[in-house]
Structures are given as C-alpha cells and as structure tokens.
Image (cartoon, rainbow, N blue to C red; front, side, top):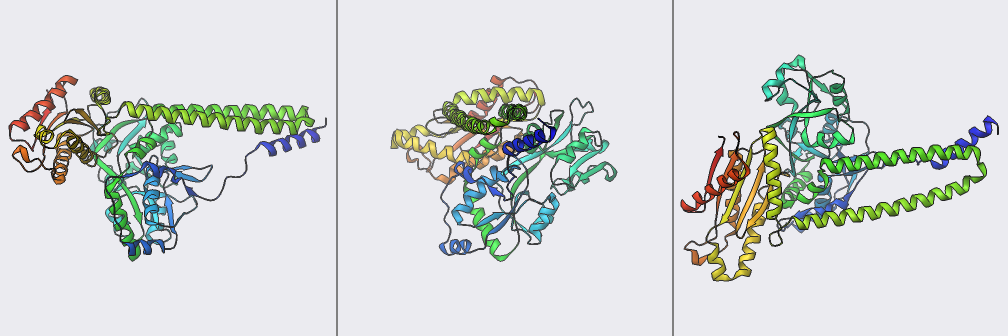
Length: 519
C-alpha cells in the first residue's frame, strides 16, 4: 500500500470517528427545576402575568461559577443552582428568554452588558453598591464565602485579612470582593486578572507570579477537581465576609416589576435539594473525574487501534463503523443503568437519613454529622454552634387536640425551622419527640443566636393554639452552645446546649439561652 493511499484511508477513518463541531447555540438545562420547592404559595396578579408573557425574550448572560452555574463547553448547556431557580420562576411567570452566546467576555464586561442594556439578565452576581446604581438585584438564592488559596505546602501563616498585606495577592477583576481587598492589600501587591474565567488567576498562583489568590470558596471547591488544581489548597476561609448571590437585571420600568415578582418567589423558595445535587462532595467529584478520565483513555486507545486496523484492512471499514455504533449503543445502555442505580441508591440513603414525620434529618444522621463537624472543629478551630429546641407545653396539645394534631404542629414547626436556616452546611434534625436540634458549622455565638431568634419568631407567627397551657399559642424554648476554643468533647457540647435549653425553660419558656464553651 502506497503512502498516499494510507494517508487517504487514515483521513477517511478520522472523519468517520471524529465528533461533529460543537453546537454554537447556548441553552439552559431546566430539568433541575424539579429540585426546587415553594415553602408557601405565591400569588401573582393576572394582569402582571399577562404583561410578563408579552415581554420580548429576555437575553440572559451567565458566569461559569459552579455550583451556581456550570457551563458544559462541549454542548453549550448551562446547569446549576441558579439555573434551577431561574427556570422554576421563569416557568411560573411564563417568561420567554434566550442565552446570549459566549464571546469571550470578562466578568466586568458581562456586568457592563446588563448595565448598558446589551443584555437583560446576568446569573449569578453578588450585591455591590456601584452595581446596584446601574442595575436591579433580586433577593439572594445562595450564600457562600471567599477563601484564601495557596500552593500546597504553603508555610507562611495567614490568620485574618490583615495578614494579606505582606503578600502578593491575586483576584479576578470585577468581582464584588475586589474593593474590600483594596482596603487591606497595598496597591503594588494586588494583582487583578481581567479574563473570561479564573484559569489565569490560578495559573499565576501555580507559577509563583502571586503568593495567594482570593476566590469564592464554593466555586474553587468545584473547579479544583474539574480543572485538576490538586496542587492548590484553601488556607483560610474569610467567615466575616459572606457573599449572597442574586439575579442581576437591567434597569427598566418593566424589569422593576419583574424583579418584584421574582422577589416574591425567592422569599418562598426552597433550593436545598438543588444545592445538594449541584454542590458535589469530593468523593463524587473524584469518582466523576476518574470515570471521565477512563472514558477518554478508552476512546483514545480505540481510535488509535482503529486507525491501525484501517491502514491494514481498508475493506473492513464499513463493518468497523457498524461495530462502533453497536458499542456506543451498548455503552449508552450501561450508562443509563448505572445512572438509574445511582439515583436509587441516593434516594435510599436520603430515606435512611430522614425523619418520616417532619422530613428533617433523623437522630442517626444528626449524630453522624455532629461527630464529623466536631472533628473538623478540632482541626480548623472554626466556630461551631449547636441549637437544641423544645416545644413548650406540647403535652397539652396532644391532650387537648389529639396526637394527629400534635403531628401537624411538629410538621409546621419543622417547616419554620427549615425556612430560617438555609445555608447548605446547616443541619436541622428531629432529636426526639418534640425536641429538635440544629447544627451550625462556621457559626459564632451571635450569629447562632440570630438564627434561633428568627426560628422562635417564625414559630410565634404560626399562632398554633394551645388553650390548655395557660398561654394562647405554642412557643419554643431554645438553648445554644458554641465551641470557639478549648477541648470540649461531643458529649460536653451536647450537655452544654441541653443545659441552656432547660435554663430557658426554667426562666419562663419562649426564650433563648446561650453559652460559649472555650475552656
């Protein structure tokens, strides 16, 4: 066989095996909207609904910021927590929209597109006063924090923001945290990276151009595995600077009414299941990474072997293509079976960890999580709070209305708790009977007290009658223990929160008592 014939055969084979060009169109994966729930009904005026449905298609831009928004570059499809929330609300309002194709715009340029009406919506963005002057923000649907990231094995200590002044610090230009950094880091030591993604920032960190990078903790956790940033690690989480992420909308009279409608839904939205599915743990990420890596290697080996076979056996080309199609169909069938099995396992695990009456975590799940978070507290020293909540005079409810009504009361109180402790890391559980527990990682005493007060007030607003108790309505007593130092064990931690709960009971009920365990 001549070289020219061999080259022709190889070209034909590669043409037959290579995938087609990536689609230019951009789209949202709205299947995740089924993971979004409403804590209470939302009513929208029919006239406003007609107005929203008559709007021209909204032009939507998105940032590649998993788990809020994750872009599949091969398919041009966006998914994530923000996409799930957008699809759910847009579907309820009957909105028409289209994704603006990616053109290599930076974060700052995408924000500018919304501010100059070049686009209508940006997903996601955190609130900053200068942005609010030129656009409209909805209520938040997700909260995260920034982190200081260094090369693995970094020895220089960083305990607080002020320590950054000694180092060369990198940040993506245009993010909400940039002005805060400028107050702590001298101008000559702060480097900004005005790029379409964060890859340039982390490459600069790997090559020693900067000492540390400041970046969103949740997004880095996701990208660390998808981009293979295994030589980088978080050295400090900036707990005092939480960032709430929202939809950013161009400022027009029609859009102002639209933002108000979005806020009504966001106030009642429960995205906890969406967060659980998109904020993947390290184990799932590693499993996905290994599977993808193995698949790529398998395809590379198969392609090379097929090319060699084609050079030697030109007459078998059609048969080879037919076998390849059959193999792809079988692989697809196997993949579908694996996905169905994984979904069934996830559902079974969820049922094993959930209280059947209140749909909060059960006692077993709570005990496991408490042990894990207590161990993490020992490693990191980040504050850890535990809230114990007991329904006041609950026996009177059962005696007067019956146990069925008592169960309804417990479900209503659990819903009130779920609506006031919305961070992904917070764990609410039914501890036993009418007693509940709430574990708050990375939460100090004052912040825990604020969550407890919101829950106490939410239960009071339910106005659940309790005529035989000597008070008109059901209330709750709450005890809080916070670990901020020292060497307290798990049992001492539980006993501290329990002691505060009974102190609240003895002081008259319907109140909160708290203690800091630092000895």
